[in-house]
Image (cartoon, rainbow, N blue to C red):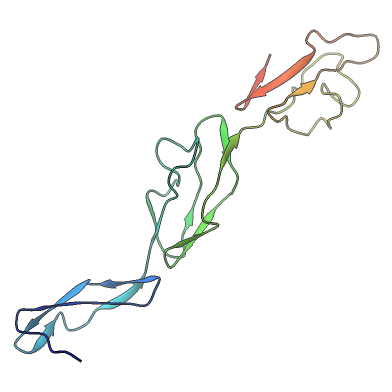
Length: 158
């Protein structure tokens, strides 16, 4: 190939998904310095522009996730991530992103005279409430004090 003049620089290159360390070598006395470089797997950038992500960043691990490491998705209070983890491989996260959905609410378990199958009509007592909430129900002979239970960002209302 082409020669490098004395004092000149050589930019190291690697296959896609890898980055050279160091990024460049200098020519001194007919030899490159340092004499070698390594191609290391690229880290991954944390996903950006995720609605309702934590103000501290989308990944608990920080803005960069190392190769073969996990990004633990972080959402703002009242929201939960659609993925439990994103894995970095040679500069690419899998899956590449996640969403922050409104948190679910647990059904109240301490409602006196609740219906036989729980305080929410049509839901098993162990089923969490989504944002749309549920219609309150009581045991025969009792009336609910509220018609609906709503769930807003993980908080039950009323």
